[in-house]
Length: 110
View (cartoon, rainbow, N blue to C red):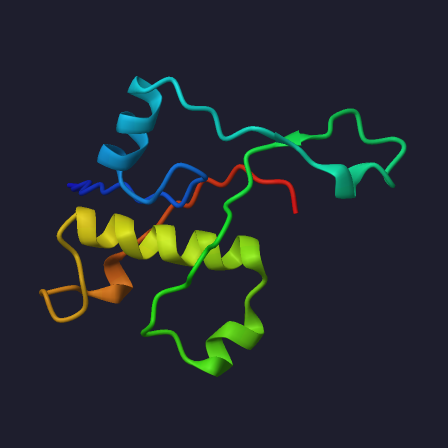
């Protein structure tokens, strides 16, 4: 028997919660921008992105963790933590790490 308990976590240009993101969608807002710094890549077919501006990582992360992570990895790790919280699976809540099989789906350029 397999049991699937899923949670959702996201770090996006519109925010970190579905309520924030949905509100911006409903207002018709757009986070897509022209990325001038990509002009130097002649073979790149697009210069459009939805960058996450002003990102602040969780205050619980230490310097060692921060040195070992690139920005896209920071987004992924934070989103995974948010997904665990959303699923009700945080440290100390009868969580057996050996029985977890996480799946991370990432869409990024960088």
